[in-house]
Image (cartoon, rainbow over all chains, first blue to last red; front, top):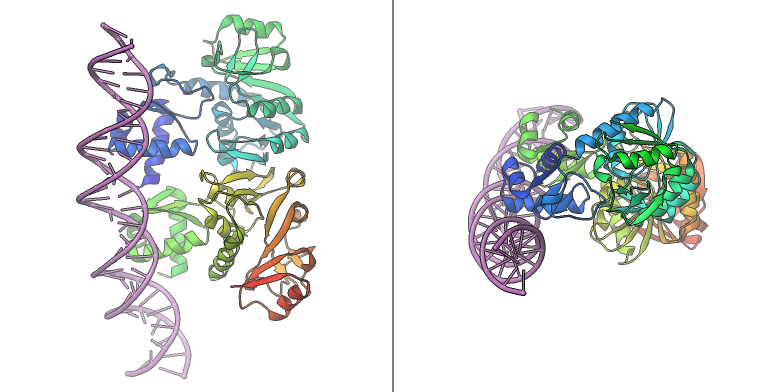
Length: 253
Length: 253
DNA sequence: CTCCAGATGAGCGAGTTTGCGCGAGTGTGA
DNA sequence: TCACACTCGCGCAAACTCGCTCATCTGGAG
């Protein structure tokens, strides 16, 4: 089998299963573990999956690397559900700002063929929508971070400050019980803050696994800055209550 | 079957399947693997597909109108020669600004693995270099123009104005006998002008076919703004003389 | 009909990828 | 803390693919 074909297959399997050990991947691809390992390393460096000890996770998580056994299983269904609810908020003609991360990528997939304007620093979103004639795509500038599939830096911030969008769909690496939105990759923080300033309305997309959010290291904003929170039904009720008290519309799916 | 017909067929098959091994392609086209290989090499060099070890991957789809893909294949050797000469100017650690177009894409291919910083509005260059760990890649922001594989607009200009680079590698759609550098796509003009302002040194890359250049509609700059001109030996001598008189170092390959 | 330029297919050395074995490193549990 | 089990990355040999060369073939011009 062609290496590229194998890569595609690997990513699609990972996309469905969420997380797999090396041996399993090797078997499913019909190659030795050595080759599977090499593939994983390669794709990991390109940022198309996240390598963990003993296997790989579907997509770059912004959480720090954790031992294989502790990684949550199949977070992906949660992400898809959240993305579907987010897509329902979008009307034709809207101007949207999509944050980095995989949840927003899921949203981008649902926007295919819709006549909207998408602004993003998320290179995965660019790959997803670049061929779509219906979508007006605006890519933010900046330094390319292959692992996170994003652009960052002062160019990104500068671009954002020159824009005004209807809705920002924001991701996060965690949410504290007091409603603080956290991120663990510090170079993304100024970008996210700039995004908050450019949006009339802010929609926070977080899967249940992001609560209680002991993973982040930087505080992006508090609940008062969020207009709508979309998350799963299994998310921590106490935290959701904090958001509701801060006049945030909480949508659970 | 005619070679051009075969090329079309190959691209259409590849467009649907995404990625195919050489043997499969040869069978589907009813030719030997040697011929299939030759076709793949040719189309790969022209940027209409991406060659991988053992087969080929479809290039990002382009709309029917493809100013980017339909560039003549016979022109390609010229472009490669120009790009090779340009690559020789590059030293490790340099900061380069790459204009849109296929000649600069050829240059990007030669920069793979080199420890340089590449700034570009050329999305084809981004695709080419994004997974290269040696290259620091800075992508300019702006509206995505899928068929030209570039970003344009005020965000692009704004980004460029905040940068200062060592060398700009500039493309053009034509060069007038008086040394005027022309471009035919008017939205790119302000971007190119901004690029000129951001570079300490300007290297103009034009193949012989760009002379005498009745194709452009907007004047980007005159020869006085160019430091080095790299072109083919067959290019119009009178025009080259004009550049030399304007103190431009003219390199013919 | 012959000639000729360009295209095609087979053969060959060089380079790339694959799978296995080994030593080192990492996670787990007593 | 220590030992055991597992995983990782590297080096090597085998299999495969690549690009090149050369002989053959095709189709059009004279």
